[in-house]
Length: 256
Image 1: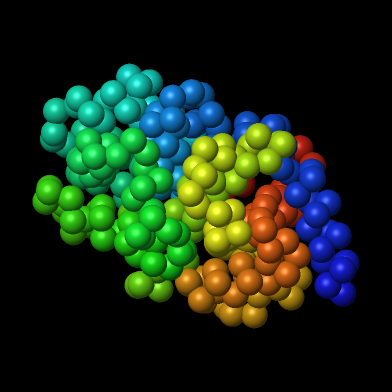
Image 2: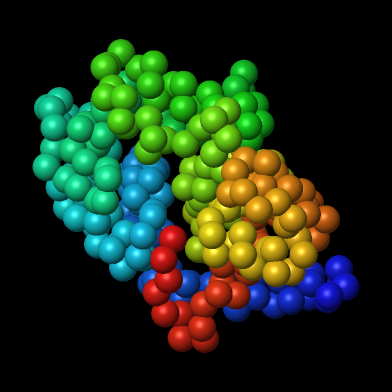
C-alpha cells in the first residue's frame, strides 16, 4: 500500500474506534467512573498496570480494586494503613499493590497530580521520563519487594512500556471524542509514544510501518516515528486504529 492509502485506512479506523462506545470494552471505562482528578489518576494508573490478559478479566480486576478502595481511591491511598492488601490479578498481588500505594501516598503528600512524577526538570521526554518515573517509584521511603519492579516498566531495560504509554495516552490526549481524559497539560501529545502490544505490532508490521520484530523500546520508537509522518502533533491517536483494526464491527472483547 502507498503511504497515502495507509494514512486513509488509519484515519478511517480512528474515526470508527475513537468514540464513546469504545469505552464499554476497554479498561479506560474504570477511571471514567470518577470525577476528581486524583481519583481518575489512581484508577487509570492501576487499570493500566493491570492491563494484560483478557480485557473482561482486566476490567473485572480493576473494578474489584476500586471496590477495595471504597470507590474513593485518593482518600484510600492517603489514609489506608500500610500492609498487604488481599488482591491478585495474574502475577500482580497484594505486596505489589501495597508498595505502589505507599509510593502514591508519598507522591501525593508533595504534589497535587501524578503528572509531576513523569516530568524531568519540568519537561517531558519519553525515554528519560519513563526511566525517571521507574526510579521515583522505587526510591520512595519504603522498602519495595524486588518482584514489584517487573510491574512498572523501564525503557532503560529495553521495555516497550506499553502499559505506562497507554496510561499517558489516557491522561494527556484530548479531542472531541472524549475517550481519553486530556487532564494533563504539561506533557505535549506530540511527545507521547505508541502503546505497543502484540496486536498493534502485528497490524503495524502488516502495513509496513514497523520492521523490527522484537517487542521492545526500539520498536516502540520506530513505530511512533512512522506514525508521526501521518500526524506529528498527535501520533498516538493511531493507537485506536492499529488496535481497532483487529476488532470486529461489534466491538467484541480482545486481549491486551
